[in-house]
Image 1 (cartoon, rainbow, N blue to C red):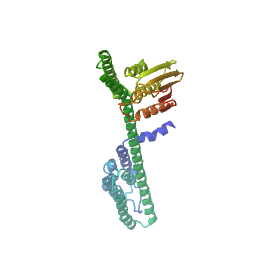
Image 2 (tube, rainbow, N blue to C red):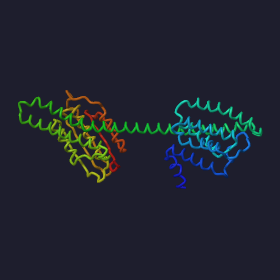
Image 3 (tube, one colour):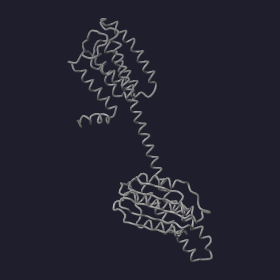
Length: 385
């Protein structure tokens, strides 16, 4: 049964041109076998004629053009039709007559334009052939026989049209999949750039603005400028790592936050003038999958927003490792100021919600009951990256 299921798949993988070429060669060889002479299509009831040179020409016209029906469907079908007409009018009745419906399937399947006009032209050409065969024949062939043969050819046309529609649907499906993949990748890149750049640049802006007022305190000014330089170097390092991830030779693994990354984020935010209280409880899971990175991004985005929208306010960061999940809560008390803070696009929190949802967690961001703003996330750990 497995072998039988694999046959259609193997057949579809073969190039269409090779399939028609194989059918034409096989039909040509079978038509030359003496035992099969005059055992093919008999339309009109003409008496059989011995196989001669013209019969060989008719067989060749009905079989060999099938090799090019994918590339030149109209020309090849015209040659096959000519061979079929000679075959029937001369009374050879060879097996090569089977090439006509095969060519018709190829014509309907691979003709790119003027399909309706081609079908009408073929139908119009069939009428005089049927009339001639009826007059030359013994008269035993009733008009219904010609009509049934025409319906059989119409069925072949329908099969070819169905194959063409199926290929068009598959091409459209692949196009949509490719477009969705590109869109998802652009979204992922934009989200990573936002997470990496926004936090560092916001800290640098805040630190640079603070440096304006420290000209009378050289020691503090030097510390602030050093913090700006350190933040810039971390931004460059993170950007290089992100570019490595986008390199096809680098692999598709998710980025793991550096050891002590959360404490580094907190310390960087403190250097920018934010009062941050940080607590981390529990032991991280041995295999947290993408949860560690998502938790890191939640804290990073929340601290960035605290710098932008609640500068100077007391900010608390709580991270708990509870067995198979990580909970994160970052809140501000609303006592700070957002004067002169850089504006936001709103995509940061939306990106965090998407990250948490992908892992099957819960995410909430909104005003705190007692004032300020709070971000909470429950992130299941142990999922594959």
